[in-house]
Length: 447
Image (cartoon, rainbow, N blue to C red; front, side, top):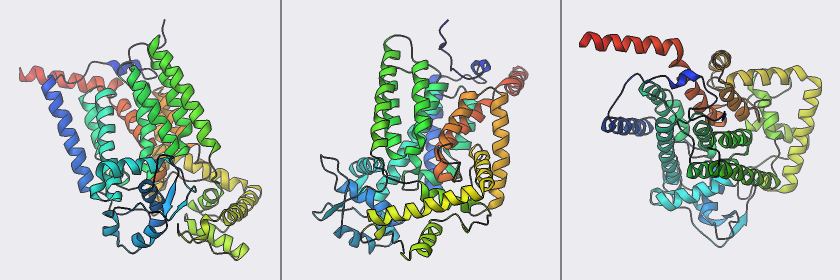
């Protein structure tokens, strides 16, 4: 018997229970339209007016403005001075300039440059940073539409998803934040489509899904394990024959692409690993979860002050960066040797919160509550045999939670999987049976 039947795989059989409500096609279309309007309204009402500092956004916006056919990442020297003189509001509506005085840049991950280029091309008339926000809002609507139409089973699930994810102010806060954190939802969406989709993916869906997975790694390499898991699930979900052959070929191409991306990585994790120790009380001198903790320690040891200005700062100097990361690496290894339980404790706390609502920098009590919620979610997923969903959340987060807490920006993609898994859990089994029975009783009484 084919292990990939026409029902969603890796989910309880009761997922395919009869829907609570039946609606005509025109009503369903109206329902979808209303859901998208509500989502768009929430993005307008709860939009995030903040953003990363210019030092971190400029490489992407200027890189997109100066991108040529060779796709080399170069940023303008003179335009940085112009942009630095703008206030926050004017900066969002500023159109970054193509100039001849460019310098190469390679510190961060390349993928968001391509996102900035697409945003600039489609919505550049609003300003490059506003264009990024607008593109992310449009993509959020697409993600909601895909999950609503192709993954969720019935009306109750869809409206729970709308409230818990699509219109959730905490989710919208990241959606409308102009940085690459939002795009970690792409591999989560593809995973849900391949694993919990209501039908087998077609060849175009398989190709689009794997292309989105590869782009996800280019934007945010920490999603690599979830990307691999999603692509493999696509192979099993595809129909035997041409679709499965295409899926296998796409997975092979994806794997080659991941190796090529990994070969070009020059970043060191030791800054993040050292700073991550400040997420919880400790006796090793990392007082808070902030980048300045690393810069301060390096200055104590070397006398060199790290300057992160993208033009003119010493952080982009290869020798300074090598010395900086080497200094933090040595210190982190010393801490692991002298305080192994500290590192293990942090990893345990982070792991629990990864299944909850993440880590709160400002409110420790929220982090504690998140950990309790995470433990409950783990238990629920295990009891309901949602093994792949639990594995996906773990695969998403295991690349960093052993040294850094799951702050919402880092952990954004996992929220989509968690919400959908919980929505399925809460609307299946005894609960759904009782609700369906109650609805039938109401209809009979009305008749």
